[in-house]
Structure formats: structure tokens, C-alpha cells
Length: 361
Image (cartoon, rainbow, N blue to C red; front, side, top):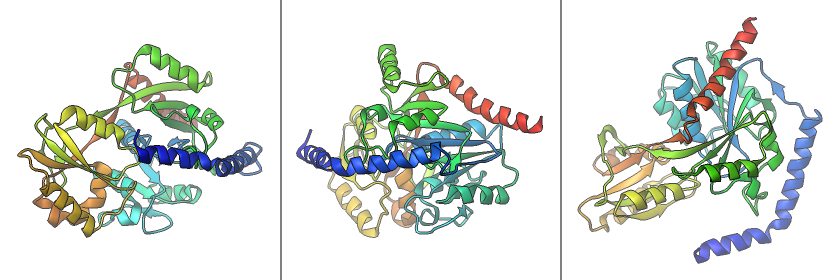
């Protein structure tokens, strides 16, 4: 553990009084919703929510993409996100001219990957859901991205994510810990997914984690690991670079938790150099010039710049500069462990199918 990490942890402990106040506010808010002093809207429509109890990267975007791939062949589906760090406000539906600055990097990523589905953003989901249904009245389900803690809307199926290396049961309220909601809120989820697990997670460790999460009888706990794809050029998806032990990589990323990615590079490349930015960082031309300078300083024959799909969305505005640069994007997908992926798939699809059937009946 380096000095910066020790200092940060010590500083966060000193903020314990602030965390206790924040926790009291969260507790009171939840009780007001539980007692119906604050109301949750219950839409007569299949809403699948992906969320977490903590800030930071638990893998919400890859899970949303997994759900789109799962559901799109069977149902007419759309996504609704808040649009974090966008330069606009209110409801917006992505179109051919939309940029990441208008809807945020993660929704833009969904729009680029799935241009045939409605991708919308809106801070107030209670307002945005009817607007999306008005714009796309043919929809049969909506995936709510990062909406678990927003109780003004009650989703019919909640998927709660928690990071293997930072389970919500071992965490504390902000700013001492990473929790933005109380642990007991997990009871509102139909499914809990432990993300970013080691690919060789043992059955013994699996059972130990399940016990620590204390799931209710009606809750299922699943486990996923990160499946990395072959890097593709940021300007040309057909130009791929399979990583080898000879490669030296300049890693450019602005994501909440880059550790699994760094571990992957330690295993599959010769070495990597870091160019880290804050989560959702908006890249400037000065940033791009810094990246180029650092890349030139790498004296290796087999060298490349590697970035994440989220960062690529924010870098793509420099298309002309990137065209001649060996900058590649590393795609990821969640992969279910213990051969339980089909059970997860069935739980989600059955919810939508049964919901629609009940409305017909």
C-alpha cells in the first residue's frame, strides 16, 4: 500500500462524523419512503433497474449492455440513464447527431453500440419514463441505468451489483466509505450480482460471500467475472490488436476502478505505463498532447495506447488526431460463473414476459 493510499484512507476516517450525519439523512429518507410519506411511482410497465449501493465502478454499464444483448432479440427494449457529467439538463433522446457532451459518456456508448434501440437520459426518471414511452410507444421494457437508490420510481425487477473487492456488507457511508445508501436497502432487489470476481472463484468462497450478504429467501445471488475482448482501433473496429507478452502499453483511463484492467495487463502484456484521469474525465487537446508525448517516450517496438470503451467515447472527438495513432479500445463483458448465466437470463426474461402476459389477461 503506497503513501497516497494510506493518506487517503486516514483522511476518510477523519471524516467519520460527516459520514454519520450522511447516514442519518439516508436512513430518514428511506423510512419516509417505507412509511409512504414519500411516494414511489409504480409504472404499469416492465422496468428493469441496474444499480448499486456504493459510488464507483461496480460494472453497471457492462451489465446494461449484457441486458440489451439478452433482451433485444425477444423484446423491444430501451435504456434510460441520468446522463452523468453531461453539459445539458432535462430529458433527451439520442439521435444521429448526439454527442457525449449532450447525453453523457455511458449513454453515448450504449447509443454507439446499439443504434437501433432508444437511448434516453433524464435526471428525473419519474418525468423521463413517460417522455420516453411517448417518443417510443412500441417499447416492451426499459432498462434503468443506475437507478436503484432513486426511490421516486419503483422498478419491477431490481438487479443490485456489488464489487467482489468491496462488498456493501463490508462498507460504510460516504465519505468515510463508499456507500450512498444503507445496506438494508439491498432487500429491495430481486437479484444480487457480485461483480469482478476472480475467474477461478471457489465454491467455498462463493458460499462465504453469500452468507455475508444475508440474502432474503426470495433473492438470488449470482457471480460474474470480467471477460476481456480483443482490442480494436478507436477509429476502425476491424483493426484489431491481440495482446501479447511482447507488448508495452500506455494505459489511458478515467474510470472509477481501473484495478481489474491493470491486473489484466500485468498478466497479458510485457508491461504497462499509466496515464490516469478522474472518473468521467472530459479530455482536452492538452490531454491528448500529453498522451502522445508519453507514448513517444516508450522505447519499444511493439507498443500501443490502450483505453476503455467509456474513455473512447470521450476521446472520439479527436478523430483526425487519433486516425494515425495506435490507440486501441479494450471491450469487456460480464461472464457468469458456476454456469448460472442461464438462470439469471431466465429470471429477467420471465419477469418481462410474465408482466406482459398479466396485462393481457
